[in-house]
Amino acid sequence: MKFKEMVSERPFWKSVFWLGLSFLVLYNVITMLFEYGGFEFTRFFEERTANGKLARFILGQLIASFLYGFILSFGQFRSKEKKE
Image (tube, rainbow, N blue to C red; front, side, top):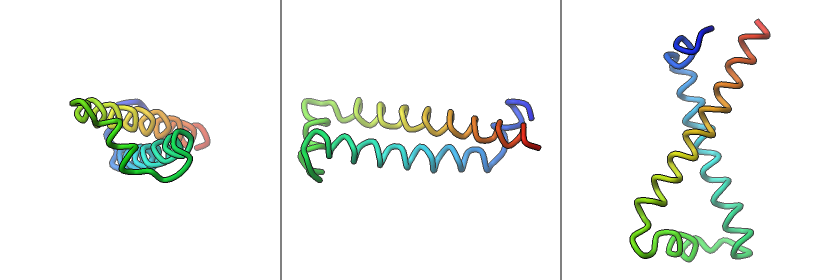
């Protein structure tokens, strides 16, 4: 399967979404646990969005989760193709 064919498939983008979302949640929870020693959601988000950094935080999270989901999905779909 070629790259264009792969990215035009709906299951590929579903995989990108779910892998990206799970990365986003796990990454933030793990970061919070390491930095604060517990579930300090309010403090975690206040520190990351203070002083006008809300847009930067959201954009960074979205880009990181998309890239993670895309790279893993691409690898999964390529490996499926090679097995077939």
